Amino acid sequence: MVRQRQYKHSAGLLLEKGYVGKGSKLLKGNKGHSFSKIGDAGMCGFYFVEEQTTFVVMNRRYQVPLDDLNTFHIHALAESMIYLTNLEECKALFADQNLLEEIHFIGGGSNILLTEDIKGLTVLNQLKGKSVIHETDDEVHVKFMSGENWHECVLWCVENNLGGIENLSLIPGTIGAAPIQNIGAYGVELKDVFVTLEAIDVNTGAVHVFSNAECEFGYRDSIFKHKVKGQYFILSVTLSLSKQHVCHTEYGMIAEELQKMGVEKPDIRSVSDAVIKIRSSKLPNPDHIGNAGSFFKNPIVTQEHFQSLKIHYPDLPSYPVEEGIKVPAAWLIEHSGPSSNQSWKGYRRGDCGVHERQALVLVNYGEASGKEILELSTRIITSVQQRFNILLEREVNVW
Ligand code: EPU
Image 1: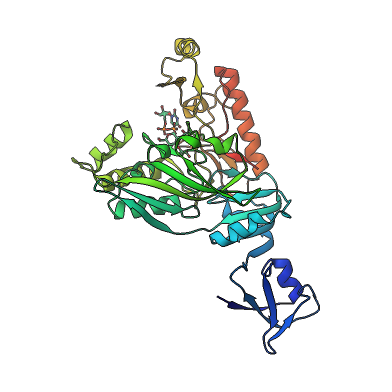
Image 2 (image 1 turned 120 degrees about the horizontal axis):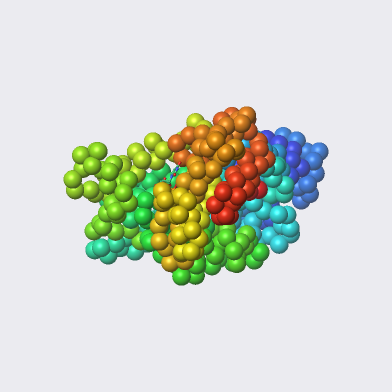
């Protein structure tokens, strides 16, 4: 199949912008004349790019402002950006072994803190689509393309009576980002419903399928954060969703919220509504106040360490887990501060601060820079360590 697209640019500019690639023919529209030297920047006018089946048109731009592509709304520029909208583009991009630049991938931009402009190539994931690939009386396997918005997919599942991810409502970000940190909330983690994911090796262009076990999921963790960090670009994620639902309402806040809503027999819709209500009341909406959700992970301490802390801080909440005792970072942050008589919770300096309703969330009230937010996070880490001898780890990726 041969498709044609029309561009009004010089041939050289088209080439530089990435509209023209291998296997393409650049034709001057009005004469239908084909150019062998497509790099000739002197030729201006309307051009028809004739796309052979092998040809891929990629949209590449330079010095792209990232303010609306990160939920902290930090001002920074991407030196160059490619917008990936289909699999052919992904394969063409990663098969190009001349691509020696450092690559950064952006999905929903909800788990990054930009401390400087991004050099080299940034790839914006705009792969969209969902399809049912397997169905029985009890479950449906749905394959979601990685550029889909996570929350919209949750709502789509609820709408189509597919259960399993309703507790993960309103989590910002994309489908593709979800497995990287094994997103979790209100007693459910992605790994509970995850079947497989398809990812492309950025060094070879080969597509690999990862099973649940191969992803090595842990608390806010997966193989994509360690062993194979930066090696794969996630194309799609397949989830197993239920037709016969088991609602997870054991997390205290959900039960309370459902009661307030007057729900006696919870279903996936009411659970999703309850989660949306809880999150909206406690977590700032990134469209209004820049933030990236939980900035730190909840630390896990040893039983001995926990017992010694309990002597001085009897109210310290705790959740036993396999590796030890998990304590809420939000509590530790709330109970330490910039000075002995001040809490971090609600702290603000300039345009950056700690949210007043959830101490785990750092916020940009307007013009804060990534460096300022990073510096605040370092001050918090130091003060929590001094008071509780616990080293907080950032959940957000610092770029
Ligand atoms: N707490 C405080 N001060 C605060 C907030 C909370 O002391 O300002 C204490 C309370 O004792 C509360 C406990 O922390 O009972 C736990 O709080 P919450 O249920 O709000 O959960 P979290 O531990 O702060 C985690 C996830 C959230 C997820 C919620 C609900 C992490 C790092 N964060 O937060 O995930 O929504 O549980 O399941 O595990 C995210 O990752 O962006 C995120 C929001």
